[in-house]
Image (cartoon, rainbow, N blue to C red):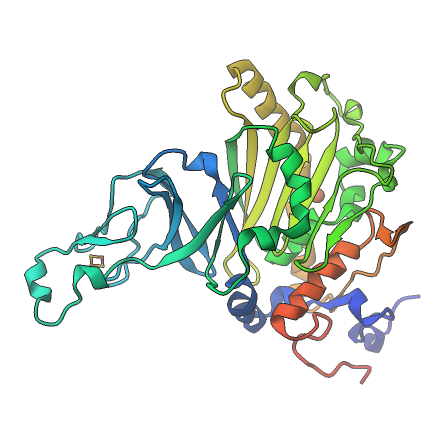
Length: 411
Ligand code: FES
Ligand SMILES: [Fe+2]
């Protein structure tokens, strides 16, 4: 039966933790609050260490509107600085990536070393009377740390250390990242008219595999598809899914993919041929360890309705050119950004967003419940999505089903 106007405006008839107000995806005030209370207080993925292997190698990026530069300093440590000159605020480093000996601001040529110290002020005698001295004019350094070769940063000096933040989810990484010496071979950026949470939760939502033409013939035809549980890290808001309950690997039926060749020779150490391990780190980093490649998805929001998704591919350092070509081909054709899946995922997020934006959809339903035993849930359950919004509520100080504290039509 179609819903009446009143029913349409009322929350769905499910428990309160099983739906989300669409305003969490569209409201500019909520987005500004998210920047302050959540995104500036959690660890943000920056890059893989192989992107800055040598002293002076850098990458620029943004977070919550703040330009940043991450660089390998002469002491070999990877450091992050707010990429804004202490003089009049210009961005200091203006290229996406490269190698530098020091950082020179192009506006009035102040200079900084790779530790963020200000080392040169043009005609510095002009600052003798009132300052600032060079000692007072360094760049702002931001906490930066690495785990399994993944570089993260955090604006919040009081946040728990990175290893504590990764928590028990570390076990999903360590066996694979500990066994393989990875390096990046692919980086792709996609702009989306959609919300960063919707993108991240699409990566965590196995129910939407029904929407992917490729997955319908590969993942979903595996007889044991529903036999592996979500492992939820309630303390930190992370989730991962790997082995089945009997500890056997879950193997995707890639042989059903048109044009698939047996590529077992390139399988990563720690994985079986066809095996998939997925790790979702709150609030927005997904690491797919998938047979022959690692894919890292991370997004940067620029507002409630503009998200830039970054997708990285990792292979084995020092491998032959032929192996790398094969691995890269597999990454891009089967599960990378140029496969059907990448484009389909963007379409899923943008289609939902256009309805949420103008009020055609008031609530998201996240009520799927698929118990598998031992208190665990099957992959197509919404268990992880509910955990994500539970954590979101902790940071924001109120639940996602009524985040604006609005009266509903039912009240
Ligand atoms: S703004 Fe950087 S030197 Fe003036
Ligand atoms: Fe998808």
